[in-house]
Image (tube, rainbow, N blue to C red; front, top):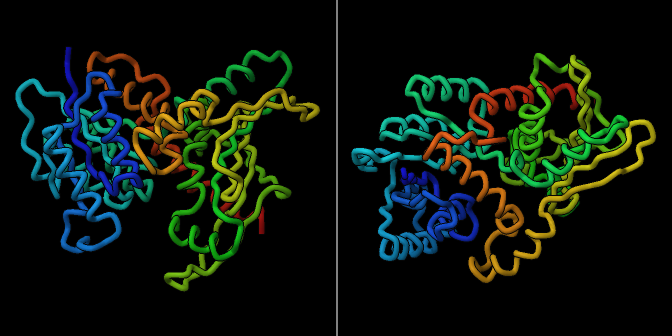
Length: 366
């Protein structure tokens, strides 16, 4: 059976960065038929990173991982040796979004046969389309890290709505837990300057593209829920520039085929994601399903004991990150369909929808 050799591009800070958690799930042999062969870390191996937060933690992690797991670490993708004959090389790119176009190009040059790319993939539609064209020309599949696409709360919500005889409304709610102050939100707006729909709520838009056929061309109507939503202009603390974005947003999309679906996001609403199914005529709630689910919550203490004081969302989404990588690896091994996993074409459509909706919803809330 094929063993997939993984090149992780963008490890980041141990306990804090998503790349590190990808590495740990593979190193702990939780992803069948995958082994971590190489790690590329563009930031912490650069001279500019000396003395920066997390630098010493990363260096210690790299030293221990090389010694205990025979994993080689490099500063650049170009330093990674060519694959041996028969190797199936998978790149996991978990770096800064702005660096992804260059990193994907470099991964193609070192013989990667498949790529797992963290969301949203690239800063703009045009850059993501160019990345897709290069990967297509090389015959390389690009899978996207939209982990909610394979989460149990999504499956349960959709199954209930589909089997209920009367018409249902379904809402996908995404909560973050920023303190509800102008100072905290201003820092958030500045750090996530691409905006809510291209960052926080991009997962929900990917669900709409994947499962509801939503694209810019299929959208018939978009309507913001003005009672729920809030759009603000705040001054970024670092730059002093004004940033306009949503701190809360809810909207309904109706497609030309008559499909209706709702998305909501609240930067200060908590730390979960929820699928809410209601009766269309009365608004009465039929059920809600959450991420993390009860089984995941019950396993949190075990994960904390294993991995220490890591970011809480790693543990809340642990089974989804694991399932997504396993589906990608299994597709690499034997061609099994990666059910629900978004590809780069889905990511392009998702980013187009985000860019399309942002000015429309901003105007509706002015």
